[in-house]
Amino acid sequence: MRVAFYNHTAVVSGAEISMLLTANHLTIAEPILFSPEGELTDRARALGMQVIPIQGYRARKSRNPFLLARDIFGMVAEGYRFARTIRKHSIDLIHANSLRAGMMAALFGWLHRRPLIWHIRDIPPQGMMGAIISRLATRTVKAIIGISMPVVQAFHLKSLSDRLHLVHNGVELRYFSPQEKQHWRRELRSEWDIPMESKLNLIIGQIAPWKRQEDAIHATHLLVQQGHDAYLCVVGEPKFGAACNEYRDKLYSLVKKWELEDRVRFLGHRNDVMEICCAADLLFLCSDQEPFGRVIIEAMSQSLPVIATRAGGVPEIITHVDDGMLYEVGDTNQLRELAAMLYEDHILMQSIGERAERRVHEAFSIQHTVSRVEQVYRTIMNQQALEVPVRAGGQSYEQ
Image 1: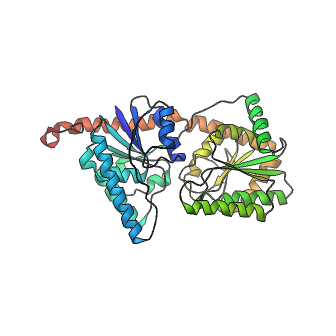
Image 2: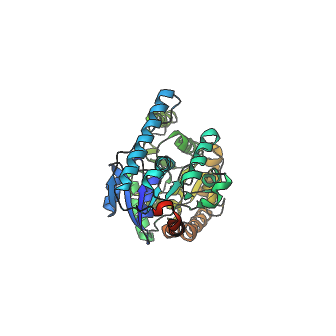
């Protein structure tokens, strides 16, 4: 089985990392990446994946009717180009890695004639736009994979109920011995000029307003005011638009305002997330509505306690005070209280970290994710095998 993984952008964020990890661990299918040239295609080639470059189109959210019309036209044109490209290759199944990619592929299903999966990694819009998306899905997709319940529940039409599949993201389990963890703790803290005995918090992810890195900075300010020897590393960079660059500048201003220049480190994009987790004491996740939060399971896999917002798909990962901590979005005083509680109770911090690691091993390994995805593939291909004999004119999707 040859599966086309379709991504509309070459920019790499959590969705693309999850896609590559899944594709690289498939056991019953050969993945082929269809994507614009860039970081994503470079990473795919490094993994040995076949890559077929496409033009791609990155629409921007806008209320300007002229810009909206331009983006709609651009998406339609890209959908047509993609469908024509698919027809030139021996592809059995299209696995669209985002709602936008899925919609572009769906518009020209009559042309590419391949069964289509939408893998939705963001919480879809509601209202009129949500209704349009659901109607399009009803007519064009064989399956919708959602990475958390809030994602799945956004598709509430009864006609889609038997095509919805909850498949959580998975992480590639890596074991670091106590000696290796101590090595990375010493090595990276030396790089960042952070004392070994100080408490180090992390926040990891693209810099964007909805990620609320400002809350992590404010909580660190409150902890320092309370007398804690606390530091914060902000890992990530702006990826999508001017608003994210402006938000980064706002974060710089907050650090200066609260006189945290010697306490907060902006590390930019890093590929050594697991090693960074070994160097830290806590991970903060402050997002408004995180669809899943793969950085949570990455941190938990290394026994790093996580304090995260009680929103989006996060409560499906963390059980409060068992394998992590949850707080209300924007409540930096509560975030500070939970961090201080763990700072002051080493036994609690250690036990939460140990249970977090067990939780990931039991529920969030990449093998678990791939098994669920491949079951969706099997179901669709079995349906196709039954449908082909009765298709008008005897045509199959291969023709």
